[in-house]
Length: 516
Ligand SMILES: Nc1nc2c(c(=O)[nH]1)N[C@H]1C(S)=C(S)[C@@H](COP(=O)(O)O)O[C@H]1N2
Ligand SMILES: [Mo]
Image (cartoon, rainbow, N blue to C red; front, side, top):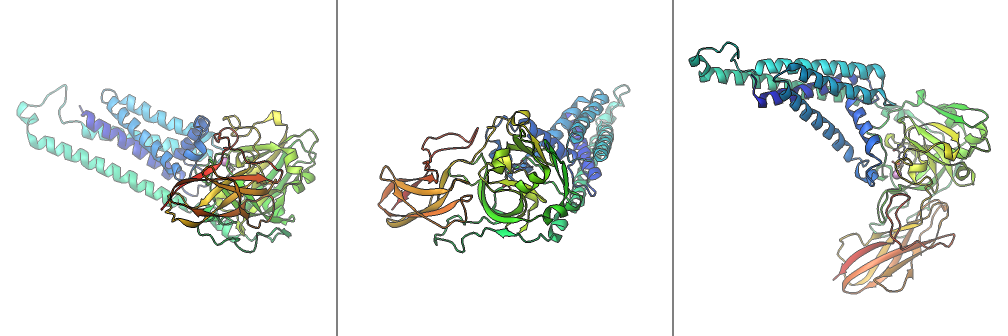
């Protein structure tokens, strides 16, 4: 009989081959998920509500490869266990591999971006390849000792036979591993060519009819101070998408549906033919901790949402606007916020370029003054008018607040964390924001001293953050610098600390410095 170690290796390798084959089968020309990424997406949807800091912990760009790696390792471990279990009865291994494939198939079939035939063929061929490899390796790995008819004693103890068998088993195992790795590489390169990159580069967006320009120059020359406009590459990214949806704008349509007089279906060309505006708006994630960097300001170019809504004719009792993404994500906000005169856009351009794929190409919503999770649907495919009580967006059932106005906040950028500060004149600087209300005043305090008013930079509108700067005559020793903002309604940023969950963190940002 095959040893436990060999059986485990055979099982793990058969799982590896099964995964590699599903990747190859689903790869060519596929812009949608593979079975593995579909499983990852189900994992995110299932567990995103239970981890309160999930948006930061798992949706960060770095954690997505970690999730995929975790899924692959889990499959290899399960495969090893099935290998060991099938030493007695092969049917256990066959059933185990089939069960993994069936689970992958289930994940693929309910994935809004997946193609059904690809998922079916991927699961089928993956399972068949895995089972074939398992049976073959179990056969090769069995010691050349038949249990029913033991060979002559001296034969069984002949060391040459054992060595030969181990060599051939390890040889086959090595070949199998090499096949799995190569196949995965092939699948990756096949998939690399399936993206919306070419369509995005080829796209020429019409200029905006109305432009709100950002301040012409930086107000303060303070190294380390956040720039007024965040470059696309530095703009934070938060979403539940394990793989970035790749949408060809020529096959894309925006549906306007639900409680409207005229349901609309707008092609991309029709959308960008409508008069557009371009303006800076600060966007923030509700998961942003006090002092955090899940915030940015971009020049968003797009069609006013109110234009589209008036073409559709919104029913007076449609109290909620829901944005639906091609990937199943949803975000909803009160209809009155989109129509109260604030900036609310169906965005196609970001900082002078078509939207980057990871920020929602070809179109997304941006609503000034609302956290992203209730408003900023990326890879938008439908705007649905409904009632507030009739539908909850993705994050609401996962424990986040139904309404998400951005709170008045401020952040210290300079001195940087851990910077060495010499006694004498020191510059303190940062940003403060209360989008749609605007910032009236920013104050800085050292230790428990007086609040002193900081100088504010120019800003394009109340929809964006402001840069601020203050001078301090630093004395030697350990100090704590605090900042607070007052919005243009006169409300002073609260000192009371609260967690990001459920409706955004509060408290003063502070920085400890040691002055020498
Ligand atoms: N389709 C989709 N749109 C989405 C999300 C998402 O997970 N999926 N996340 C939202 C959240 S929580 C935020 S904070 C913003 C972030 O937008 P950005 O990645 O362009 O900064 O997008 C919003 N739009
Ligand atoms: Mo967010």
